[in-house]
Image (tube, rainbow, N blue to C red):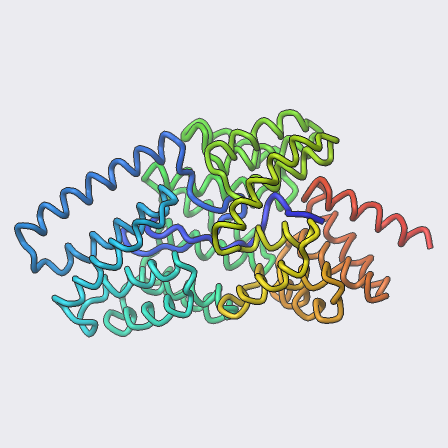
Length: 430
């Protein structure tokens, strides 16, 4: 199987997306912010103007430690919106300058900013260190608890992360904290509770970007609960507010494919890919086109994933692509490297699948088990474990997992779902 379309439980760094400080939230239908949309361009312009104003103020008042912390956080947010890591350097410089004026023992905002920056760089151990320092300085700083929760979940300590999220909600019940709380229940497979909390996040959201964010996640959760009509309604509202949003276009594509509208799905995925050329959207488009027999079109889409994998540090999407496209050994190496610093359920799933595709299914199974240990309703994860169990001769376990994958989402991936149906039929025939 190749890459799934809608990944429940993928942690995504979107620093400052929902609050004025660090926010690292999760997006099942996204890999990064919608950088090419009018709303995102407007946000980037507003942030750039804020950076200019803050720099002008700091030129007049160079000892404003809070101003330097704000400047650093603005650069972290710009990196998210523009997908330009070139902002990390200025962010670090500004945050360090803030700490040089007011030390770590009294500068929670700068420490929280560093937590967001390290998370954006995928150094989650560093993010945890800074977040804990920030909490130590100000135990009532909700943003610091949010940053701590994000780091802990990525480090494979979700229970500790859930406790930090609850502390954030207790301190400040707002869009950011409700969204995080929603994700903790999604991870545990409690989709009704996850939906309820995301609705609360939507109700209190006031900024356009925050509203669109919550609508995207509401659509994803509705789809996971088997309510495509509700999902389509959320997607339509989101696209009306933010035309061209890549995550929403990808969500609409998934819904279209589920109805058998492959042409509509391909059009939306192409639009999403044009807006945001990520491996997630590229592989999804390639898989769809492969399923329709468009080999040339699929190759063109897959080439985007290959290019990203050769020029950037590979993430889960690239690992899964390599595993399913004849580079399993390379996928194992990359997945093991990821797993040394990120023991999240998503990375565990990728490592397990890479090992399986490399012919090492016995090594793969513990990682596949770990990926599902919280009860997450993840079609891809169950499919992966089912195929691993099948390779190990556990026909009963394989059947249970593969059937569960199709129950959760019978259209989780055009290639994977077909393999699942074929495998299930073969198991039932014996």
